[in-house]
Amino acid sequence: MRSIRMSSEAPLLAIEALAIEFAGAAAPLRAVDGVSLALWPGRSLGLVGESGAGKSQLALAVPGLTPRQARLTGSIRLAGEELVGAAPARLRRLRGARIGTVFQDPSTALAPHLTIGTQLTEVLAAHAQAHGAAARRAALAMLERVRLPDAVTRLGQYPHELSGGLRQRVMLAIALIARPALVIADEPTTALDVTVEAGILELLAELVRGEGTALLLVSHDLAVVAGLCDEIAVMYAGRIVESGPARAVLTAPAHPYTAGLLAARLTLDSPLDVPVAAIPGNPPGAGPRPAGCGFAPRCARALERCRQEVPLLLARDHGQVACYAPLAPAERP
Ligand SMILES: Nc1ncnc2c1ncn2[C@@H]1O[C@H](COP(=O)(O)OP(=O)(O)OP(=O)(O)O)[C@@H](O)[C@H]1O
Ligand code: SF4
Ligand SMILES: [Mg+2]
Image (tube, rainbow, N blue to C red; front, top):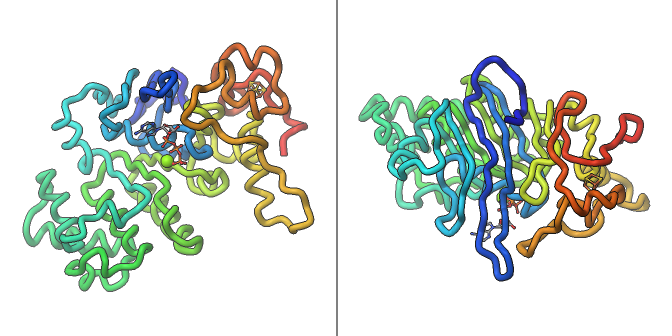
């Protein structure tokens, strides 16, 4: 298995050769195309890439939330238990109890007609962890841990009475209250403004670290996740193209796509008279994917071979890279 970190300890999450395919007008679309990764207890992995890379489909597959029309093959094991093909009732039990999820928009994820307190205590009751007064005490303690102001009052409020940032704190509380072994957060702050975003992400990283929980954090922003996660995996056109320790990927990217993502990000604050270094062309859409390396149509380093054969994700420096012409240390930004 290609893994994000080698360890003698068994990984909590082990994904092998995962593929998720949708029927397309001309040919099937492989939203996730042979992804293998591993995540250990207490570690955090940031999954980054542009829109359409397959990040959400990968994140949804773990708790068994892949759309019904998709075909899923490969293996997803959580603490050794195979989840691909598991019974829906089993997956429902794992969600909340073993796998906490935080998705983009808290206004759709929270039930509008239930108070915050009820939504928290229902998670505990569903997993037979606490009922009645004990569940209410645990809910209050959890709201205080996510630093929701006036936690006692909030227990009796409905989602629409809270701002977007506070609703997302409630989502974190719901994801964490049953003390899951794994938290999956898919762009949890996209709907929020930048100052609120930073606070929520830091809180999320701090809470999972304190609990020894593993975190899979999906984002389109490499620099943001590199500041919060231990490891980074960069996705492009359904495949992982580079992975490794966050700092190494951020400071010494070896894949031309990772280097492009960083260059695009680093120019956002540049003066207006400096040309913006971005990646030319568009990420692949819902149409057929090119043969060979998916990034070849946009890559200034592409070789003939790149358009014919898919590069394998191979060990390099401290991490792994899938490229026939990776950046040498002297070329790195
Ligand atoms: N229900 C669906 N039916 C058909 N194709 C889908 C469906 N859901 C996703 N896809 C396709 O799968 C690919 C990957 O989508 P995914 O949502 O995982 O991307 P993403 O990396 O999360 O992007 P974003 O940053 O925009 O959230 C896209 O090309 C998308 O069009
Ligand atoms: S394999 Fe070739 S096309 Fe793909 S990123 Fe590397 S150099 Fe560019
Ligand atoms: Mg997404």
